[in-house]
Image (cartoon, rainbow, N blue to C red; front, side, top):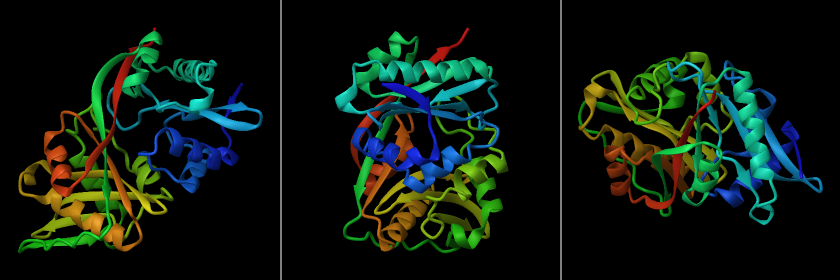
Length: 298
């Protein structure tokens, strides 16, 4: 098994591997190819594949988290190893490459994700479990109805609003999102790359709510064919507990389904009770869980 740097031509095999190992994660071939060919700015992003007999059987990436004010905070994406090729050192080799890269760029605290059965692997590599992340799915057949906004509220698509306003709303609503590091340094350039310029962003389905002329909530949709991922649903702190999160998410789901999406996926921190409740009311069902795991590099 050979570990090498990922190249754009690996994208299709990486996506096929991800669909097999983590079917609830949604990132298409074009989006993956773009990420490998043009890494995110300011993140020192790098990725590797495990190759066996000319086939990609493993994947991992590592980068600096550019959306938090915590200095030197690095992350290793959820490693993918083909079930038929586990126990042969590929996962360890990918992890070793990722950790070496993070040391080289000066990361000191490192986060990764692990499924419950992979926690022993994470512990062996010096990581301690921290927070539960819950994944859910929703069947969008038949197409859910479009919600009717209350008086004074308008529902607009991302295409109608444009990136500057969406970025300001996204950055403000995400500041107190539960997690291991605050999401309080989301620059416009980083957001443009991750969201607006992402080939998977559905600008027609992504929805914003405007109350009395003020943008107050949004739900972003990324899709791959007939599957979608709720990238982020959030509400300004001044307008919470008024049903805006459920409103924009219902509208986004309706628009995505009307455009051919059949299954919607999302994830939530286990402590994010309000969004877990919103998703339960929408009919999402649990499909998997992971744990964030942390390690300090010396």
